Amino acid sequence: MKKICFFTGSRSEYHLSKNLIKKFSNSKYFKTKLIVSGSHLSKRFGNTISDILADKIDPSFLIKINDKLNSADEISSSLSFILKKSNSFLQKNKPDIMFLVGDRYETFCVGFACLILNIPIAHIHGGELTEGSYDDNLRHALTKFSHFHFVSNNVFKKRVIQLGERPKNVFVVGGLGVDNIKKTKLLNERILIDKFKLKEKNFLVTFHPSTLEVKKSTETLKNLLNVFKEYKNFRIIFTYPSSDFGNTKLIKMIKEFKKNYKNVEIYKSLGTVNYLSLTKKVDLVIGNSSSGIAETPSFNTPTINIGDRQKGRIFAKSVISCTGANVDIKRSIKKGLSKRFLSTLRSNVNPYGSGGACDKIYEITKKIKINKETLKKKFFDIK
Image (tube, rainbow, N blue to C red; front, side, top):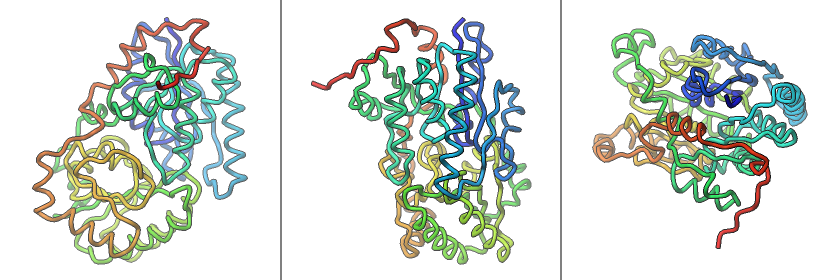
């Protein structure tokens, strides 16, 4: 049996990977462990470890960190703590392969621990771009730490190879988010309407800090909230921003806004079923979350992507990008609601695949051979 270990540090990345973790955990070919950290263990962000337990996945190791992260010192302190604790766990358990998803700083720390312990890494969702945050740097660094790469499409495969990775170790499997949609039983429309008090028209909003432009994030959210004042007849559902630097101010602004508008509701975390069910039902998904880019197009629900946080990603026809300027946000929302724009989505295709990523990753991993040569990475030069 191969010893496999997964790591999760945020609701978004767990939301992507949970079916993959389940598949490996239920297999007779693998012995699977799970490290949990980040916002999962924070009351402030909804204690989303409860989602993991509800999915009947048993965490092997918990790393609780400071959940406010309002300064560089606090971020550095949390990073060093995750590195120290994950190093201790991995040194004791020594998995054959460590699976890491995406681009967050918590994930980067575990990747670095694996690097210095000579533990092979399988990285999922490499080769993508998000130029508005330092997640971009972390993702590419994780690519260089890693030995096997599971990417969403051929464009991302090309980028990973461009970073010097061997083509034979880069596998196009599609996006985990799309796969998750295929495997999730969504709520009945009547139940959904009653549960969230939906109106005839509805918005689902997730606005994260842009870690390279924290001040600009605040200004952009202020503009967005001002625009929402014109939509009093709409149900506007907010989910909390990520635990990245700058989140405290954004959360405060959203809470203050809700005090004056009865049509607004805020959730720390919706969970997979609620979030995907709402994504299908609402009229617009609004904000700067990767879910609006990689998953929402599968429902043909329009996404209003605000600012540069997701700049560089491949967008479906259903994604309308705009700046954080008040007038541009207004224009984009109007376009997303228009019959003319909605009619163009009949030919909409999600560039992150049509499902099947979990099965592909599982079957490929069964065939992977781990030996002394695995860790001796040679830089692949493009000729």
